[in-house]
Length: 190
Image (cartoon, rainbow, N blue to C red; front, side, top):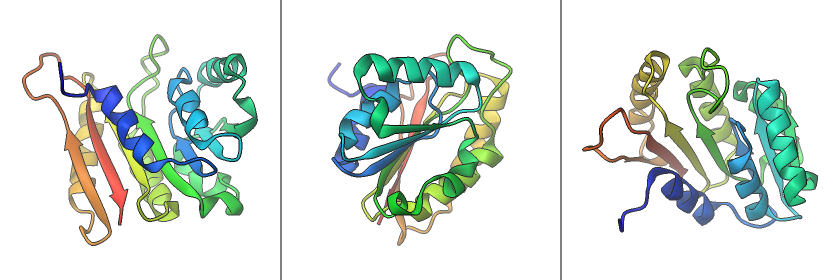
């Protein structure tokens, strides 16, 4: 296939925005794959801030970062992403170039713990305000479960109303795949 899959496309978007020495946010650290990816993009001079409410996710991510020698440029918070604005130190807020959300539940984790549209939208609003012009927020939306469908609808409604003078909003998805395939909503600050 010549078209980028969902996760490779998400990373492509982040690679275009997140630069060495900048700050980035992994709003749902999960198993740490995106945290590691962002840590490599920001380099030793940059900083990644990761959020998750599940201890298992934070443990998995910490372990993955240590294995890769990337734990020095990452700060993890045992908090929801809706607390981003109060957690990020002021000196990094002006250097925020990108953020990624993988919505839904922790793979191989407790499927009763899911992201919620209210907290996700609150986090997106806060992070957008902190983003530098040209910065990007990438939301990977998994909607194959009841809560995910509700979050999908509320997020689409929210992003469709963002003023086009303030941001470019993209929806990237495969429309002929079965079983509610994930898709991307991306918001680039103008």
